Length: 528
Image (cartoon, rainbow, N blue to C red; front, side):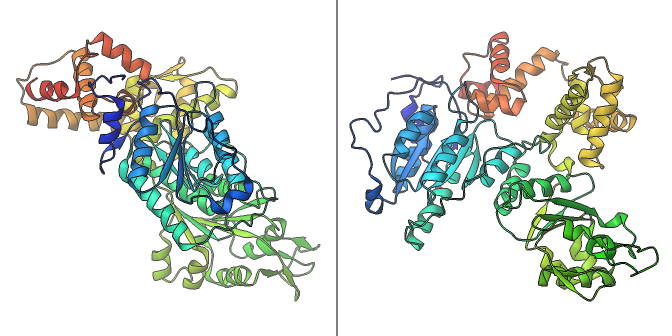
């Protein structure tokens, strides 16, 4: 039996993971056990579907420890569980049985990073009532959006808690108990193929959860209200909702309500007929009609007048418009996504926004957090903007450690738009590596203030006589601390440290930490 570095077998670790509160972690450190799932069984016949056990679950992961952990949690919850270690095995299992719940890793081999999405599409097409949960150790917000909008029930980023598996399993069980399995499926509707919005960049837990919501609402026809500070990416999210909806092939028309004078906005949106006002020499279709069958995005909706809001409410309620100067109504089929950087509830209380219109627009509200509340996304965004510059013909750029620290310490009141401008400026000034001196003064000055405050607080806590450490010793101790906190799990530690697994391995060897056990780490930290 293979042993882990902590001296426990993978089966012992799997047993421990069955306790609520433990983490299920992506280790990739143990050899896979031989799996005989599906061998020697009779092929599953379509006519047997109605007799299949509805409490059947499949766990697909090339990491034996993850696979056995999840499987054990499901078995403890009363599920009949089978396991598969590859996409090919999962496809074989798909045709051999009827599944109610499938947990599948996104990366099932080193050769293909998206095999999990192929499993998702196949199960969604052939067993549409199966609930598919994608798992990944390389999660991102756009990954969550892609997964949920492509039909996934949920999207879990490793390491995840046992409670997450239990929550999903119990929710699916309740769904099975409440309804009878239906064999009626619209075979003409295929799930959306996997696509990525490269401009939706983020790995923070808050942004990933937000993209799950976006993915779920995309497939509906409900109005959506997007709130958030300026520069948080409201139009980008609106376009993502449109692309993943059934209206994705139809027009997406964006209207900045704050940029159109109040006396012209009705004509711009709903159109006008000849002679309706001075200068109206021909009939003109409005943007609402241009978007027929698609989506209208009303940015800065709270900047509109109360008079226009009455007419907008009618268009939403009745699905019809009237051009300026015309007595005829026109039926127009559009989905409305609105956005504002103000607090719509406060605007309503202060009489600047109609209550009935707000409740019509906010069937679903999506709030985009400011960049200062998801600092983990700052570096991925900065790298993305650097790649965009390189794609436009500029030299590829990297970021020094000090520059990254400054970027992550700054609050970015202008959010993503301000970060983009700072990176574009730095890329134009730097010599392929962005350093502190390449960043705007406001970023550097803010970082200096924060550093001075940190040094002052450190002196108060530790005293002026504390021994000064070398940079290597500081790094060694910090790696030691992170490994202790993650229970010795290298992949989780690498994620916290912001480096890849190979880099972490080199540092462990350099500082002679390879043989340290988590308990030893904790002891050394206490006595060191």
